[in-house]
Length: 126
Image (cartoon, rainbow, N blue to C red; front, side, top):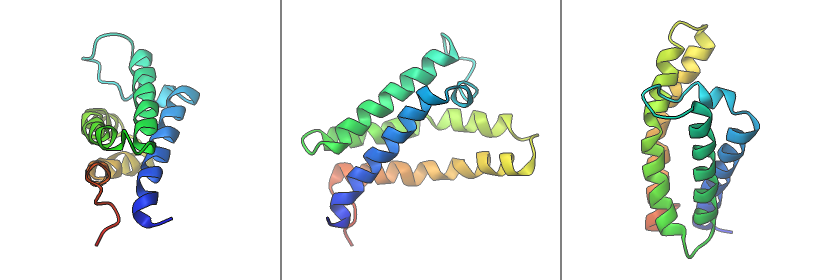
């Protein structure tokens, strides 16, 4: 299997794993939900978990890959405010927790670019 064939499956695996953790261990996700959003944080946690599972299935299937990968790029950009909230909430925590939260912020950019490259069919090409 070539790198360009593995990339969408790796992205789908990442999405699926993240989606499952929203149900298996929801509490950390609940804490990242901005208070300004209506409804309960748990509903948003479960909803985003469902979204990640649906996106994973779409990215894994060649016929839906392009649309699902584009939606994944939008999703990754859309959850950025939750990551910012998590970092701000942890700014007074011990250094490892704070570093992990703030270190996660710039990782959204390569995730968005990865999803876009999968949508464009350019992943793994030089």
